[in-house]
Image (cartoon, rainbow, N blue to C red; front, side, top):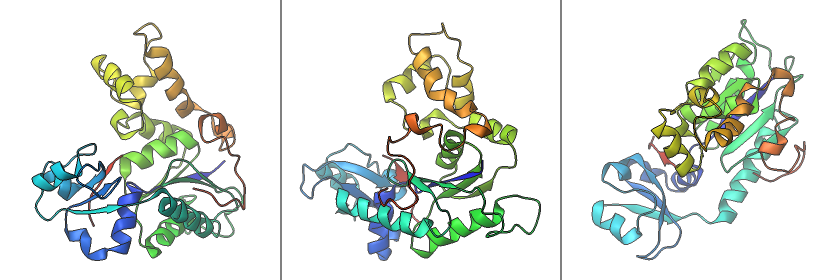
Length: 260
């Protein structure tokens, strides 16, 4: 089964930039409430360069960064953007399933005649169509066309931007194994415990001996999805993703982001 993972890093920041294009040249943060004691949720690279980090108080961030811009992005706005994304992506696939905000999977089975490839790279025309559609609505991210949900997601999170067409299960597994755990939404305590064992990538986590630590079994459960065979496809991962099944017509979809 061919699937594509679309990952839009720091979606709330991107929504701010879409409303305020001139802010792309300024340090920008997303905060939970517009008051001095509000908390920074996302910070762009310019803001991070001045020492602003997620979790800081807004007043402290203002003291660190001259010219800092801030916006509150309510959950309703993120939900509306997700609905917009799904509606747009349904033009490119009959089945679109959201994960966390900004991450979606598309089913590519049977689309070869709709998106014919000029060369030997199967899925290339489809992947570029997805990327162009995202760009047309003022967003940016990574598109990875491959064979399994977790591997395409991990690779997309590591890429952050661009298009990658994987040609085989072996290629997909090799690339996914090199993805740093820091790129994934893994519990910080587990991530730090693994780092103390010298485990910093998905491949190292998959190979972690069962008796290495009290965290090993949890780590292996997280990693096991990356080694699913192609036939497992997008459906067999439901227990590891949102419980809502993939529906061709349903309408529902902390990090840093470099400014364009």
